[in-house]
Image (tube, rainbow, N blue to C red; front, side):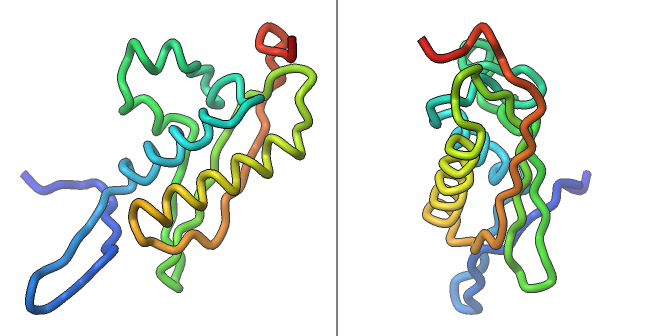
Length: 128
């Protein structure tokens, strides 16, 4: 049975071999990084930190898409729900920086863009 997941080559060396990661791995790294930012109430589909803890890390890929450009860089798009009272611009900027840093440091893959779409404002997860 062939693996139908999209794979990204992050290192290739003829004498040793290659290292590939799936799109799913990059999406999970991105989801974890986004959820670490204060003001992010949940991922776009309503996955909160509590639900993720119960369901497992694989659910972090929901609300995240990864695509490889012609220049072999990744474009990551995330859908978030922001807590009421938080600055959408500040939270989104922090999410972009956190995702870019996390993916690049863990995989070595260059991230050319992190697109954030704010789907909702969560009043229950607002500033206190």
